Length: 323
Image 1 (tube, rainbow, N blue to C red):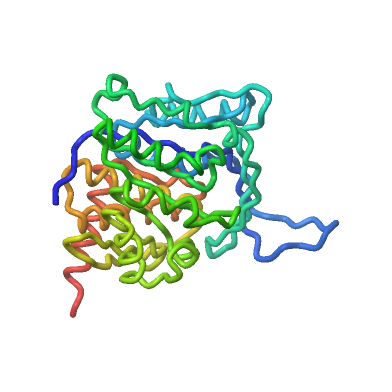
Image 2: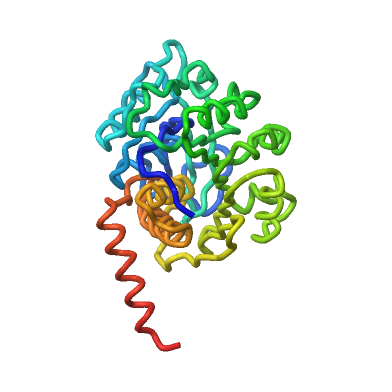
């Protein structure tokens, strides 16, 4: 199986993250709890995936929305410095930039408080897929289906437009707080070349988190490749030609925020460079491993060559261990 070279047109939410660490349990009302850090970061499924792609050397254009406020200017400056094309990002007046407060456990687990803000403004009219505007672009990545209210009912239309523009399509599901799940995702399946889903989402969508069952569920509905993100256990990939598991790398997790989004960026970056599915999965696991070793969804990410060198060193060490 071969994949196109070229860049990625990504859509998704762009979020101002405020992360608090560590918090072992929720304190009672009226109490004050001291923590080690409260810091701001670039967040959002679309933004983190786009940033990961750019840091890995891919050409990436991001479409999304922020408010005309300090938080919006902060996240856009972070994306711009990473090399993301922001010409299709909407700056909406009179609305707050999407904001998340993340409470991070010492083990890296997290609890999020989220204000949708500008993500609720972003609509299909803001996604500009005219072929003449997409030089060097070969992929269309739809992040945050369930976090973009105006996109829920027109997702299939967007993927059809991307297909008509000759783009390889991918979708990252995310958690559906509205509880509609397959009602909104099902129409997208036949138009999705690669679907990314984590275990919690898979249980809600497919009724199972067992890799073979998840793969069969989505592929029977027309999806080409299914990538099940297994957190500290790596990932599972299912396609018409093969099914396999790829273990994760053993690292000390500080914060898992954005690990799945960074994984998606790593996977697409690897495919665009001619990697096989198996090698792309290993590379994406390495990108995710870099992510979780630092606070925030993008702080720990490295460039393509550095990530590949780290991955090869891990492979070398593994091959020298006794069987």
